[in-house]
Amino acid sequence: MPMERKSVSVIIPCYNGQKYIKGCIESLLKQTYPIHEIIVVDDCSEDNSLETSKTVGVNAYSLKKHMGKGYALRAGFAKAKGKIIATIDSDGSHRPEELPRMLAPILQNQADLVIGSRYLNHQPASARKLNASGVRLFNFLIKIFTRTAVSDSQSGYRAMKSEILKNMHLKSAEYEIESEILVKTAQQGFRIREVPISFEQRTYGVSRLDPLVDGFKILLSIFSAYIESL
Image (cartoon, helix red, strand yellow):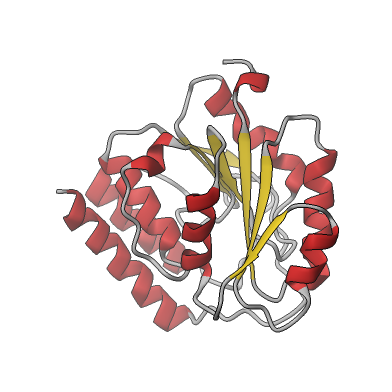
């Protein structure tokens, strides 16, 4: 289906992303592909992320209290109207200009969910949030449970057909949302594909991700999503 027939909603979950959020939005708006809407969901930031987003003229919403990335994404999904829904982090680690690469497999009817992989690029990714061994463990479990092999199950840079989310009851409130979506998408028989992306570890602010606590939550979400899909 031609690009103009496929409206795109881009959801940006944001927490204390004032330094990067405006540049992210402006870069998205400069692209040649048609974006139906950009939705910023501010997770009750302590800086001026929400106000900065509004100055660029996009749909910006704020949660009443800090709930987590997963909750912010779920709020964005509920408001999105596009046929394709893309998600991108607000901290400058993802490049908005690479979104056409994410959309291409869907527009060419080769995939239903596209994951931007940090590990398919020629240059190895340096990810401080979850170490490489942890990601490999999550990838391995997802492959065992769903027979779907991916190199970066925790990537937040994604594009998917909106129909994937229609009958999907998501529960994750934090970083484990990526695993939950991936497992449930695979279990429902949708086509999943990865494309290489650039990744720049953010140097501003402090990550709230705890490798042990959040790692456990991700493991739990993989098991829970698998059991729920049986």
